[in-house]
Length: 275
Length: 254
Image (tube, rainbow over the protein chains, first blue to last red):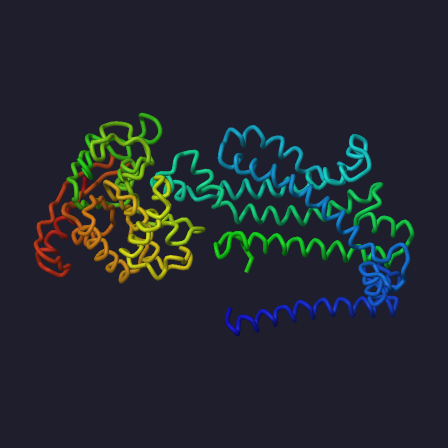
């Protein structure tokens, strides 16, 4: 990367940080001035950002308040991450192959398309009561909800990407000696990778959203359970700390996914927006 | 015979028996090592003919043979060069050229060696590790040519290969193709819109007319031999005479 490129990149990062700082400042002033905003948002009910920062530190490393909450972040983060990975991994393992097959073989598409479109509009929130009845409270219910929610964006993106593979590339592979079934792995899958990656990123983001939903029901580990417990105890500061942690975890997991794929593919033009 | 192309009364019909055929009654004999150009107005079925030879489309009548074997589906003995290149964007230049060689189960070292030699033949050694998206149109088309020549095909089928290139690059690529044709001795069938290009490159020029959109099937109107000795000069009188003869055949009413 050139010097100007690095400078431009630093400038963009500084711009992003400046906006974050402005949000924090607005938050600080709003709390101090007890502002009432649109939607009847009562800023006075929020903990000030400095307090939240202190609590976040304590949540991660302890040494500030030293209560039951102190230093418990990593345990909760670990449980949440495992659930996200299990649910997301299962969703990807099912949705990518099915999406490729549906995009490539009209018969597979005809078989699964009605079912997909029937189940897809049902939001995870609508699944919760049924899941609690047939699976029960706990980790498995959360993983199930994550799998279910991440499945559809991965499937639909894979399906669309597979269908958009230029017929020209299939012809090129065939005339170079690739067998008809060989085309699937030699051409269709690699050509669909950018779309598949987009689907995986959406699915992973959604996994963290649904995590909170799953962990609000009778689980005592995980970041979602931290938020739920804090709400029951009317600890707004802990609610906010939990929210920030989930935001960071979701952001970092997306970066790790993109970086990991970037490492896998090298300079190959396969991941959109990786650089 | 290696490299020979035989078309006998070939018909290609899309849809029902009452539709006008895209091409009908096309017969053509191409000798091994010959470079034959096919010209004609849009929709005359010249690309259809090439796609039938490539095996991308199944002909509905007649006989289609390459190197003595009937054409059934695409295969590496018929290398196709497309107007839009059709390179695999996720593979580097070298990997694109290796693609066909790898399919043939050759030893890895031999694949590398032959691909590298082919990349050098088209003058892209410096760009072997680049990706197609990083190359100009002319360079991409060189990769596409190298990729099929690496397979040592019986015949090279080129469908308006230089149509998307600017005039300067186009002239350069024409020189390049002549050189490669002399070096490899591969039989070439070349579809083009440009009469000049056809006369510059070909031993014989096939003129096609008609086409389903004109209500008559596309067919061969004439085959014009290009009897020019020595280096061809697009400004020479005898060159222009052949051009005029072909233009008259292309534009004359059916």
